Amino acid sequence: MDFSPPTGKPRRTDKRQQNVPRELRRPARLLPECVNCGDPLAGPDAVARGPDTAWHLQCWKCYEFCAGQLELITDHPGGAPIMIYRCRRCGTRRSCRPGWNTRCHVCLDERSNGPVVTDAGYALVSGRGGDPELRRPALTPPTGEQIRRAVEASSLRVLADVLRAAQRPDWGVLAADVHGLPWTGTRTSAVSHGTWGQHKTCGTIARLDSGPIGCPGCGPEPGSETTVSCTEPDAGQADG
Picture 1: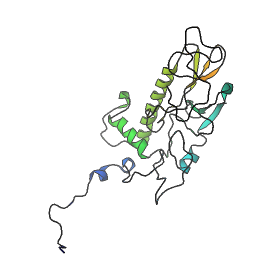
Picture 2: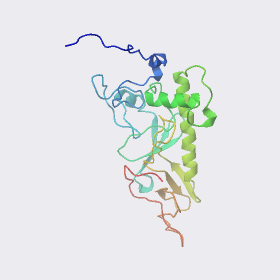
Picture 3: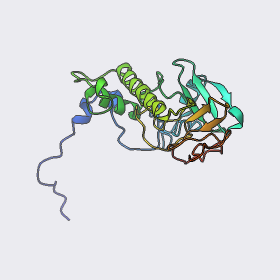
Picture 4: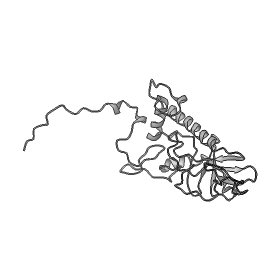
């Protein structure tokens, strides 16, 4: 048996990963991880897992850290199967199905330094993605604070676009649920707990879907189609 060393050029150590700041490095093994801080939720180094929050996995420490971020302002409004929360910091609102957990669309926290957040923020500040107004050449790697601020600013713009698109005559938009926020700064899926509104005429609370709008309380206007729903939203239903 030949035990002579292999011929050819020796394998070089990849220096590219070492030149990336620690807070921006992708983990070598992609195990389930907390969307907020990036701690592993499986494997030998796994930390305690908390309740899934806003459609994403989260560790227990991050769950506890942001537990008081939102205040419940409306519980089953008008009998509708939805709860509406308001962020204590920025004042934005988010809808959430009863029994589920959510958090602010916009606000991150000091533990928000996992790969999902840092990848999104680095792309925003370095000009590879996100809102064009947020892009600028990055001469030096962005700090954690710059990353969080960039993602928050992008999330705020995305939320504003969703609320603007939901506006209908005679309806006031109460709250929405945008998949992917606040960690990615963009909408990553149409799956949602829905955008909800209140009919200005009768006060009915209903989910606002795309297309012509009729009030389930007042009934559809002649020649129109009723496309708002007061039924419980399916957990996997896409928000139109």
